[in-house]
Image (cartoon, rainbow, N blue to C red; front, side):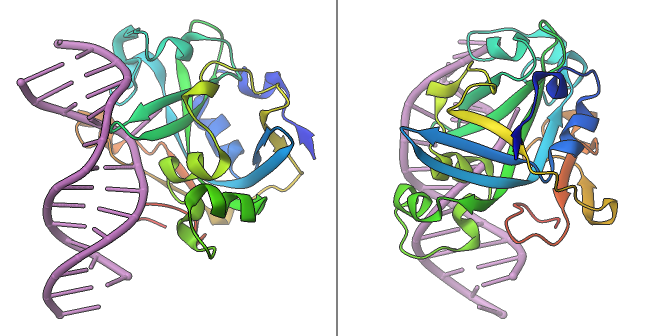
Length: 201
DNA sequence: CGACCGATCGTCT
DNA sequence: GACGATCGGTCGA
């Protein structure tokens, strides 16, 4: 199990990177409390030409500034006032590509996740959906802008690669208002995995 | 299990 | 002043 190198994120094809993120392991380590989960669902946001992206038409504000950072930076923002959504920045500095991690399957630290979620027993909702996984892994906007080469939050590769046959592709969730972009097949997920959010599994 | 709906507040217009 | 890259509870089947 090794930390994914910066070169993994520093590529031009955000769709390809999103596809390859499936099966990788998102790890957080706060004061030696480790929680991790295997990525089973993510969505690509294709920069300035993607109407569903925060950086559509080169939009740049205090919130999305980190999208223009170098590849392998964490972009975390608040949605609906309560939910912290974790994204990975890709491509060269100045090109605002990002991938939203939407769901993971718990690997390590499940009892800690239960504490953070205020639950007694594990169920599939514990890391299903971007807001939920952030609570379980202890991710908040405090991590916005930090490097995924750090030791507190990173993505690891344990050489597991999902078979092509079990990788599903669909339009993204929650972007109905984005015109044509709403239909783009930019969501990737592991078919049949119970932690995958949304309707299409 | 699906459909619906209210919560909640930072961000941008 | 309106609107989210959402969630969890409730209701009905």
